[in-house]
Length: 304
Image (cartoon, rainbow, N blue to C red):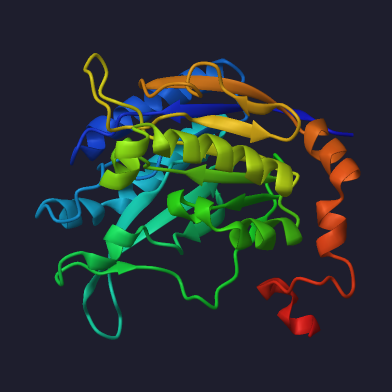
């Protein structure tokens, strides 16, 4: 029997270098989501600090990662709600080299306050490869597979922001059984090139809307996409927003956030029957699991 889950999409504006302020806002949104019966609340990437890796204050603030992870674990337990606290940037010291490394990590926290799943961003945005030599943005090994894990909402996979551009990541997750794929994001309109913006100022909006819908259809899954919102009460074209749940057959859900970039929260009813009926019709999972399937994915390497 399929279920309908309430998922809160918290399109938070992350005030730069202000983790306690941002956590306080996030906690208020989560409390309101729980009051509305949400089973899961999701926040954006970099929601505690914004993304200012070259600022001298940034790395020291990221050293507080465990403090905020524990705060979210306590919130989940208090409100009996699952939480994906966007990503929490962690400043860690490499055991061998001693160098400081920044880890961009998403967690899935269950209603009992325990971490049920963890994912470190694998695919970096191209600008992140050219940070100053004093900053090392560490990714997981290319050998590490994308992992699906059980949750109260069924099998879930985590991705982060630019991972969206790689359909192979989704294929690994659905091959491992994921029915819901959650993507905390920090995506702006200015991520587009000058050339692209000259042709279409809303090019990134077009990319997000089309790609998210395509990923939901081609993988017969629910795609939970939560992006940063803009500064409340101020005009800002930078933050793309557009937070939504993309579903097969019906497309984007999330009336308060899916069409704009204001800081806001949508609480979406996600009917998992749509996922089941999409697979019954399109049979994507059945095809990729078939012996002798003519495209080779990494998760099939052991069979070759």
